[in-house]
Image (cartoon, rainbow, N blue to C red; front, side):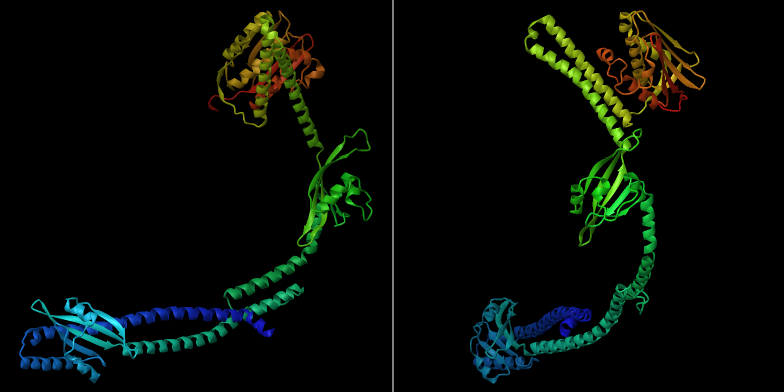
Length: 614
């Protein structure tokens, strides 16, 4: 076991890694060096043979080899000269030289082997010789003889007067070259072993300098885990390990401080829970309440809670949601609380149940967060009422259209007068729905603040006259007289013309609807004492009851619902008008008396000319 532990130690791993790296690097360098050295020595060896061969051919090209003398004495003399010339060359030990005539017959030969003197007079049938006698200059190859000796063979042609008169054949043993390579390999292996030995010794020393601080860090980490924070890791230098030791000592100090502040943090957490605006209850893994804050006790009326009270009992709900939460599921539900005092309103709480998870231990409890959503529920109720009103307003014309369309389909279309009346009703109801949807889109833009004012310099008299012109037909039908007055001190104003036109159209339209035949409408524009532009629409109509004045600007609110709907109103006109005026930074006021008339005043801030682009 101790041996296995040693093999797993970082010191052994580090030394092994360094030795492997050194070995691989040396091997790569050695392969490259030996390969390069072998190539260089071989090239030098071959180049030396070529120089000797070229020198010999040059001598032979000027000698009697090229004379072509057929006399026996002359041939004998030539043979002696050739042997003398060949023997005079400084040859490599064991090198064989042969001089051949144009037919490949050996004229002279020299070698360390006396038995090979019998080659003289014989024909050399080597392929290299044949190629040389054909004029090929570069003829060389390596051969291995019967003694397993590698030799280099070169054959060169002898040219005299442009004719090939013979050849030179050289066979040089390469034993000395390979002996040199073996010596180099032996030296390289010895150097490698010495380098690995020295590297191992240095690796042990280096690994000791690294592993000793790590062992000290391990001992300190064990002490910290046992709760002993007074010990310190020795710092041996300013390198990475020294910095690690400093950081570990700093961590130990910080951890000690963190544990010392743990109680203080718990007190802070308790204080935060006590003063939260939301109620919080925490349970153990069995669903028993272990922590509550003051807000939760106040919301649930838990003045005295018995030990072991479950969360379902505290909240007054069924056990199933709590059980699901303890299984790891999150959930949310609404909790209604009816106060003992009947004069107080019902309270609505949103309860969010979340499991408490511990690492590797599953669910260890649950947390219930209580939020008072009474006001939000009121807003939601208002939204539902708004949707119901919209649905009702759309359902009425749709029902009418459907019934008239069915009547047309059942045969009324074949009676032109009746069909024309039915189509007119359908068209009227369709236009009513279009107006309703358009008004809803306007309100949606104002609610989302997507409507931007485009102010422009507006002639007030011209604007009011155009409003009257747009309703001239309705005014003539009911014989209503209209007067328009504009203060000469305020003839123009910077307004969003389209928006104000829509406001005035709505006010004038309402004045015409609720003014009896022969009545009067006064439209005026002036600046008041507060420096505002006041545009008023006054009629002599039926007026608005006082009980309805505070709600007249609510969406879909109608004083006389049946009459207003029959007149084609959507119940949104005054709401849109108020939003447009508010977007201008103004206000809209309404004064009315039953059977006397109504005055609606639009107050707008006067924007100086040039303060806002048109």
